[in-house]
Length: 162
Image (cartoon, rainbow, N blue to C red; front, side):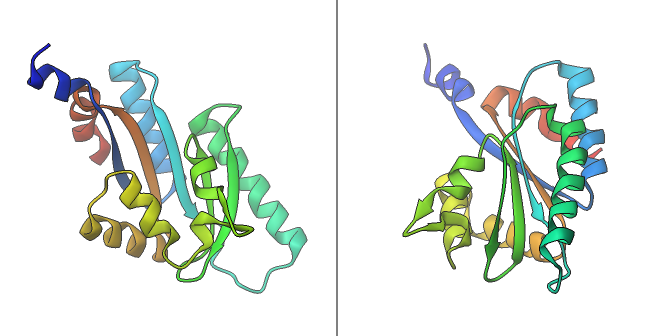
């Protein structure tokens, strides 16, 4: 196997931001219809912009988000939430959920001040891009995180802007 072939079969992460879960659903449907290849997906986003909500209101928000995500990720997917000091309450759904919720001294990794930065760096994302993603999250956008082989991600990357 040549080094070029090896490089194309290596896996990496591709992240794109969207203003709504419905836009992510539309993009993933388009990818599925054109490629029909199963992808490892995760979605990261804010739970709510309201800081003064009750536990019951939070439970309803989580139920609503899970319902929306089931249309995108299927009936069964991992889901969790955490509070990041710089961004607020966030959820993570999909295959990266255990990474974000991994406990360090009884706190989720993603809830630590530099936790999100460390997670994104661990995924191989450049610091400048990470800062852009964190800004997008602060502005109530969602991050669609896709893991796949270089060749597959190169194929679907142009469709992420649909």
